[in-house]
Image 1 (cartoon, rainbow, N blue to C red):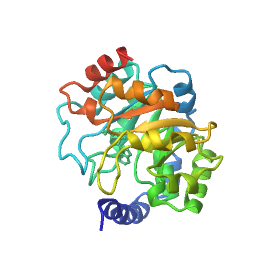
Image 2: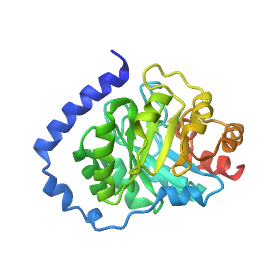
Image 3: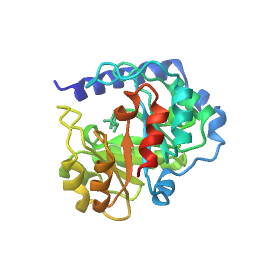
Image 4: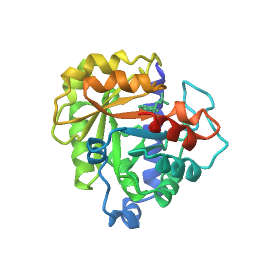
Length: 259
Ligand SMILES: O=P(O)(O)OC[C@@H](O)[C@@H](O)c1c[nH]c2ccccc12
């Protein structure tokens, strides 16, 4: 079994458990249900840098990235650096994140916030909303077309934007639908951890122009951004390259100032 299958099995169990502890009515009582969301797709369209900076403590492909800063310090640094949006990993078991991280990030910054999670159930979209997210991620590799449709419609009904992640042509073809705002090509294969910018380059032409194109993972240089822009990419999701330094905000600032 590959790591992605393992993550999804754990995630489905986690959701069942959480549903039995925190009822939907409690999530819906959050003050964030009243709060207007901020659009990442608009902010990317109007940006020259397009950087979506990620808070990621560790990952299955890298044991430990960074533990020396609080989530508030990291996201404040990202906002001051001029990031268009911030992605917050909320998976605990594999990425060391939590919904508290998202809440703390929301209390700290005013840029669009992505709940970075393996979403398999509407309940997690309600959690995202209740903890201050502006958008959610849906991963085509683990969802059917019907699931992508119902989950994205549900997100839109809560005024959350949707970033759909693909890694190959088949995933892209099955996923295209009007309820998506952005399509992200993951340069990392989540099953094998192979990383190459070629995935973004190869798929770019197949992504219809009505979606904002985002290139995700394995981006560690300005040259990578320069290479990807001609393919129509407006957004660049970067985690490790910033989080592995001793000051993620400072690293993001230096990076963005060079674009
Ligand atoms: O740290 P990187 O290589 O810059 O990658 C960031 C982000 O793209 C990556 O964390 C990611 C992309 N898609 C995901 C899905 C789940 C968890 C994590 C991810």
